[in-house]
Length: 312
Image (cartoon, rainbow, N blue to C red; front, top):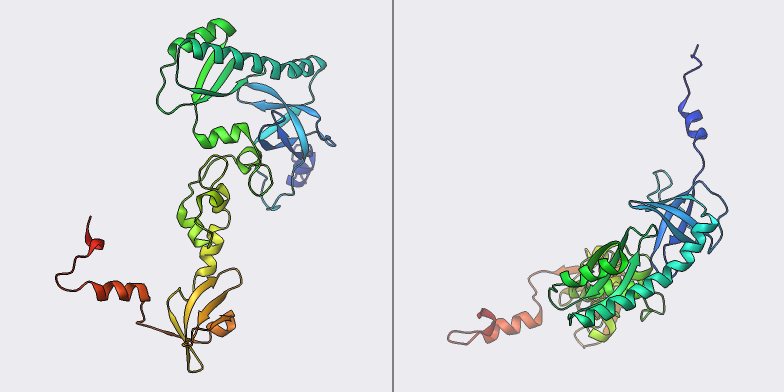
């Protein structure tokens, strides 16, 4: 017989308070995060107090979070919602944007006073007033020690100057992308992944800088979203330039369509044809055939011929 102090795992699990998940923002134009809460039925634009490393911070609820993609595992959240704010906290939260705007204008004036070559982007003030962060961009290192001294005397709190790059600048300012949606970086992205021109080539995108660059004039972050899918889909597909023999007819691969697993090929009469996977997979790949461009380079580089490709 079990003792009265023993509790089964099922009872312990049911004793835990149920948790709801919401999408929240610390600023109305800020980034969204997923937060857990012991509070049910929170409405859009309702204010809550969130636990952070430096104390409670107010935030706005933007709606329920999407369903957990992996229900069998614990859900990852960025923050925990503690409670609803008091009337005094709501009043202070209403005044916070005004304080940040005033601090922004003061910092601009002091930057001009010290003739510093820097561009102020944003000012964030902790809700408890213990610290203010000034975000800026600059082409090189900036000696802002005198500026920080003046800011500390002005606001009587801790001051941090944080230099950011153009991608982080765009993330803070926000905007709309060429897709017509809010920028990924300012809505849900938590970190920037490395983006290369190879990703655009792999997805057969036009290498026009105006079409594959974002508001920040850097390569679009969304180039990373489908890159791995295209790489996986291309595995096993004959590469461009290779030859395939199908029913005594030889075709040369001109283009790949990885998502449809089809090939655009040309025959000996220079006629194009689309081959589906069941057609080209049943054909015979002719080995030893090289791409025409590579053959041309080899033929032009004879003894005594200047070959610029070998120059360092």
